[in-house]
Length: 195
Image (tube, rainbow, N blue to C red; front, top):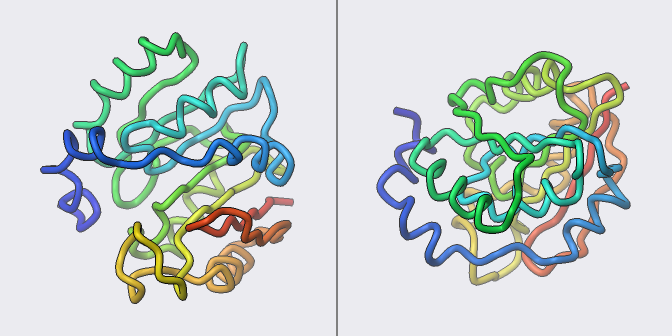
């Protein structure tokens, strides 16, 4: 079992109860900075409880889709229940592995990784798998915790990635970095685009 999967396997129920939601300004920010728009296919990598998958699904409705990609299948039943309660019908769950998201090649317009990238080991290889799933010109948006700030959420400082590190890794993987933003209280956002 991968470290990330082991870390969350026994905490799914508490994750749904206690995990804070994401700021509402993330959707307009992704629309402005990452090209999020109706009709797109979006992959929420590390979706967990789907607290961002559902707003993303509403943003790409009526005919766009969101894949809530997660390494721990225990999140799926409650995620589907909440989506049904909120009348979100354009969302599908995908069981990932530590090696990749298990998405079809060339199927996704936007990959969104929120508070997830710092869990991924072997990121250079992982970026290449993500690239295969993106359409030409597709984007990847990474939101992760500021590494140098004392904030009440997130992993230990030594486990966090800097925005510069994420930008450098994306560029090394063949993405052009379009945005490096510090607009949220706890997370930065880096957006990369394929040619």
